[in-house]
Length: 258
Image (tube, rainbow, N blue to C red; front, side):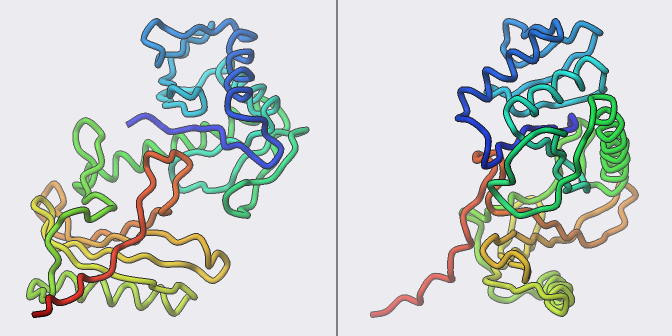
């Protein structure tokens, strides 16, 4: 699983087509090229990066000065912030760029130069690699780095009304702890997944962002040594990549009437 780095348009960003042009110009300015497959970006200093079809999403295995300069210049030209996967949720705003987030009013850090950007991304990349390593040992990330977890959307999974395993009860207890910190559970659903067993999901909001719900997921996982433990994951319903967004949880079906 490559480290995800992406450009996030702000209120001052141009349309997507112009953002794509800004990225292409930044790539050309650094002597970079796109392979014929359209998804492999090669920089002149040897860096190779996976790139999404919109040229706004990048999958990074290793950083290079040329890639950081390209990314800095593209973000500055497009008035976009740079966001990453992992635990660092602070957006990176290039010095001189305009606009504010179109999504959540999150804090942003100003990045003064491509070298500063590289240093920040390297820190986040190192954290990402630790996350992958720990996930493998905990049984939540597979050998080919795919996430081993239930899907965020229950889809057609069978609803569970009684759970003798105790998984749902444990997850609800954990959720109550979050509620003491200002979280609000909008709706919860318990289902049975063919691979992961009982899965508890809930749509929640926090007091600062009451109109931006997240999806909590809780289930029992198994470490590589066979030890069982509970996993609790949180992710927004609306993602920067629309294909990764999920709809709100549906209410329980109404009982049949005669």
